Length: 242
Image (tube, rainbow, N blue to C red):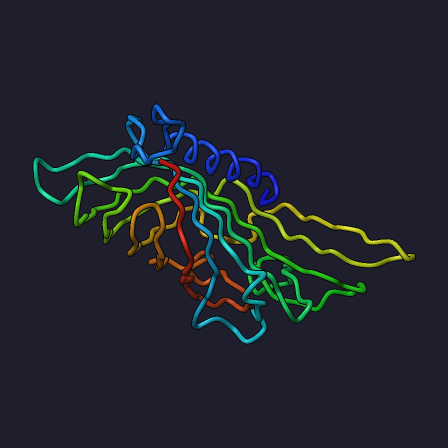
């Protein structure tokens, strides 16, 4: 799914470049500012950094990443430098295990298979991941130093968001009989069906850095690997198309 987003990101960049310039009478290019579009499309690229996690939940930082694709409406609060930005979109999360472990259900005390655990893979593993995809609704509260020129304005945003899980699976990439194969196991894996988070963004113009803290645990309470509870923090960069 991350690869499918690449054409979208390239298209957004191309549209931004097209609308951000106009030709003068002598053929030179000059900046025109943002097009008259009632909102903003943005793409976040971030790294997932869970904390208070069990030791077996060992992740490769660069492989454990987030891609968010959001659309938000821009609502200025009168003539002030403050604005609100409701919106929604997709949050695509992946956690890449660096110790070649994967998730599995093992016999528990109350039912045959009710305890989630991290277990070693039995194949010649090249990559083992947990993927979780969400639909998010969000609201940002923003301060802009120069609202009349957002392309050059310094901005600080505090935001909240809530999402629901619509797709989740583990994926193992391995070698067998001199061939590279992939194994997907689509289950909910005891992941929390809803998530709630707070976000901070700081940037200039269409570029910003962000941090997101998930208030509730990644997995349902008491149902994570080894019956643990732990949260996720994401940090990265954000690019706005309009």
